[in-house]
Length: 68
Image 1: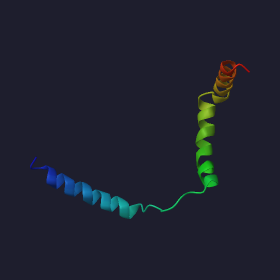
Image 2: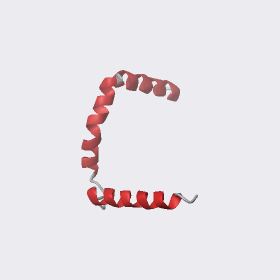
Image 3: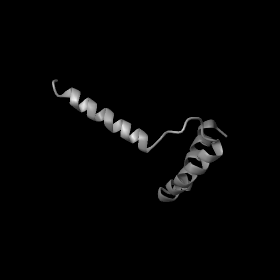
Image 4: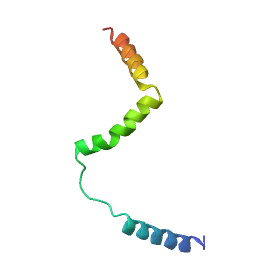
């Protein structure tokens, strides 16, 4: 227990240094910007995990479940 105070101080100093190096923006990001940021990763995941076939399989399963 006696050694928790120095670790806490060290952790707080680390947070201050990180916050100074990487300032956070306030406010919201525009939806188009968020989409453009996420789209390359989504395409990569579709290609790596054979996503088109998986999406088609899931869609047909949902279609059967709904009875259409």
